[in-house]
Each structure stands twice: as C-alpha cells, then as structure tokens.
Image 1 (tube, rainbow, N blue to C red):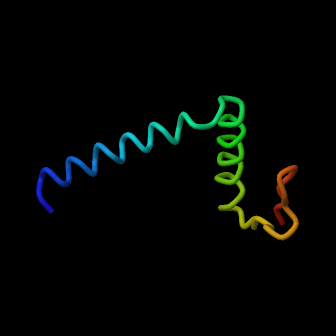
Image 2 (image 1 turned 180 degrees about the horizontal axis):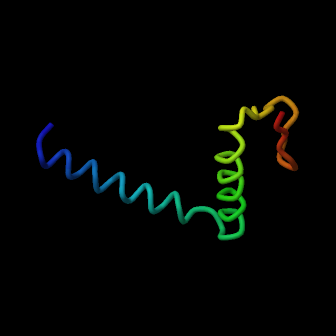
Length: 62
C-alpha cells in the first residue's frame, strides 16, 4: 500500500470516528458509556449477557 493510500485511509477513519461519536445525543451517549463501563466490570467476573430476554427497556446478565 502506498503512503498516499495509507494517509487517505487514516483520514477517512478519523472522519468516521468523529462522525460516529457525534451521532448520538449526549444523554444517550452517556447511557451507552455507562453500560460499557458496567460490562467491563462484570464480564471479568464471569457474568454473561443474556440476549434472549434483554430488550430496549432493560439488560439481563446472569
């Protein structure tokens, strides 16, 4: 891959990252980050996310 192509890919990735981070409203973004922090704390302890019974209202872990 040429330097020019690599630079183009890097610029595109930077634009996409910025766009994706700004896409959610601040309140929703804060909730998503909170869920991510919680998952980071309980996954190493052996908890498993239950996708069958979780929905938009709540998340189930066991």
